[in-house]
Length: 379
Ligand SMILES: [Zn+2]
Image 1: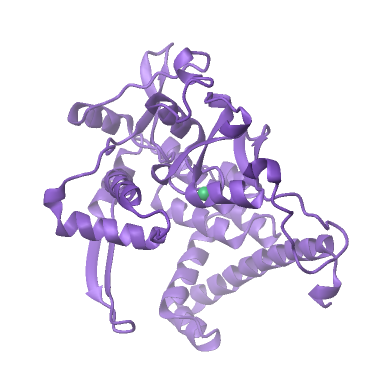
Image 2: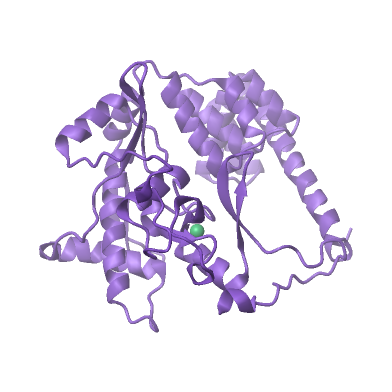
């Protein structure tokens, strides 16, 4: 059927079917690869994938590895084969299972309703919960496997840098980088802004080339934990983006660095500044990072997001926690200029940014026109 002749609802339903079919095909592919591997061996089946499916060396090796891991995971495999979970989710489960113990049933269930980004977090959280040493060995392995390289690309003639770090070192690097980006942003001519990519590239170069300029302000690492009053201990320690960290590591960090204990109580005056000030306080920002973890629109890191008034300040919105959300620059733009709206999803207890209502939901009009800019919002 010609997609242009379908209504929007029909196209969306067809997309759902395509997604299901992709998952079932991936399940079938894993089955075939496994049977072939058992008979001919790993090397041979990789060769078959490269010859017959024109896969790259990397894809072939990844497919064989995932299939091998899925063979040990009956619940996840069955869900993949019936199209209940997407192939990417199944691959995440398989990879996690090869790293250590996981709760397969719990992850398979979560994979049916969470999007990929949410699901990566659920997997990490589950690995931490299931590990016998509170994730200490996971972190140790990540530290061990650190790697970085620089090279001149033959294809583009440009210089490339890449590095892999454990999440704590990574969060430290990112905090410094993000504050350098903010410093550059503040010094820019608002009419001639760099792109975010250019800004990050410049910040990175400046940090390496001009270390004497020093770190920008606001480079404290944010670590979050809850206090279990009954057992009198810190639990659920994590980085701002929700990455779980071992409690022992939290204590080590606390001895190492300045620690800002944040005690958030929703009803306190500090959390609700009313119309007294427009910008969020440090305490409110910390509480926002705690609640939202990241940009509520696109998942950009909290380091690159800031407080936005749901009911706009100029429309009388207060600087109170229930009226503040964490958004990145781009999503902020979508809200102010293109009519995207902040909603609270009570089922998940999260704020979300959603596109303006579809003006032609059932008419099958093939071009999507954003609604007229709202003059009230622009005033
Ligand atoms: Zn965003």
